[in-house]
Length: 302
Image (tube, rainbow, N blue to C red; front, top):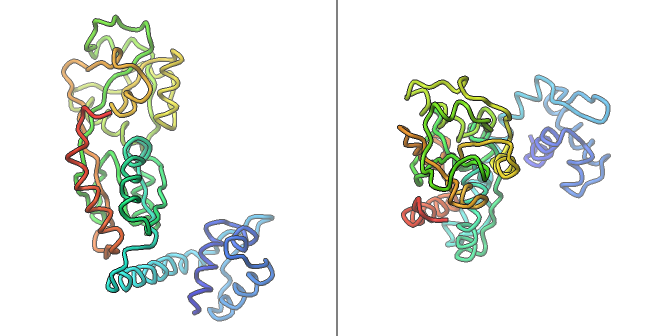
């Protein structure tokens, strides 16, 4: 098998389009088609089903895709290891982060990191915790930073920093003198929740359950797919929500951040790796940088 053919094959599988994949590699579509035809003939196997404008992997193609991603990953690791041996810390890394670290913490850290290592480029993907962990397990991301820990023997976690969740409410819902709210009062308020799979939601559900409180007792009026959407809905008066203090400080004045009586909503952010997978020198450098920065990221930082 030709390594270039495998790279083209994976790009088509991920884009679900010959024309889009051809554009990535600056090839004409007929040329790309010939490369894939050659790969199929070499394997004696049809790799794609063409359904209108979309192409999907056949069952045989799905088998090859898993191995092809590993082969391409090994190629990249080998190149980075050789560059490191030659004293060069340069190249690109693919990392993923859940919403809070991805949108509120990493951007400023990346500025410092890229200033220190100008020959490194970072591709940051932001999604909910569950999706980030899935992509690490599928070897599509080298490193993840998440706000929840989902146990899996194939994943390895290292504590990065601590976060606190706070209740936020629109102006007028509480008195400026209020510093906390009871769980009983919380039941009567219109509540905005993050989607299932969100690290914030996982932590809220776990803490409520430990306190003998089920989220079904809440008056949930909306479930939104991002922290930014939640905060905008709070600002517009849709309801209250529980969010990271990082997001709360970004969007709403501190006068309407409240604690919940009897609950200390603390959580850790984690650096996540695929267990047993070798770490590239660039990822190792980035992890070292993040861990050196974490003591400076306290719960009082904005």
